[in-house]
Length: 130
Image 1 (cartoon, rainbow, N blue to C red):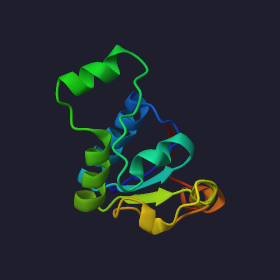
Image 2: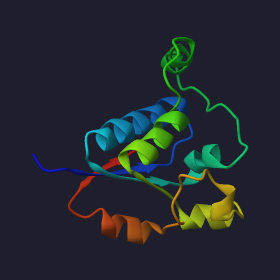
Image 3: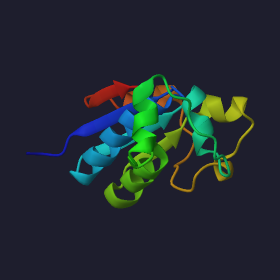
Image 4: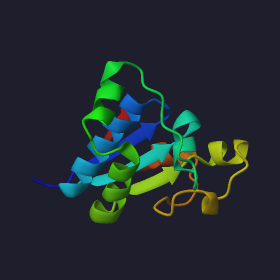
């Protein structure tokens, strides 16, 4: 079986959605799939260096994950990048609006990327949105 191309758009800032996106990214990358994750809007804030804010939960499952010691989404995204060579890309529009530079973000992040470029690069692959 050949490697799949998995492209994930993260715009939500809720724990459950970020967690599911991170689980898909880390498992897919570990299985040898080509993974690209595009972070924009409310999701990007959690990857600014020094930000230790907890993502808000949508329901009881978000709280349950924390109580049961499920690896947090930041750790899973970092593992996807380090172990599976997943690409983590910040949205260039969000970077501009937040007045950030690439140096302000987690070191596993690649260069700011526009939505048009991301969508063009994701053509032919599986596209998921959270």
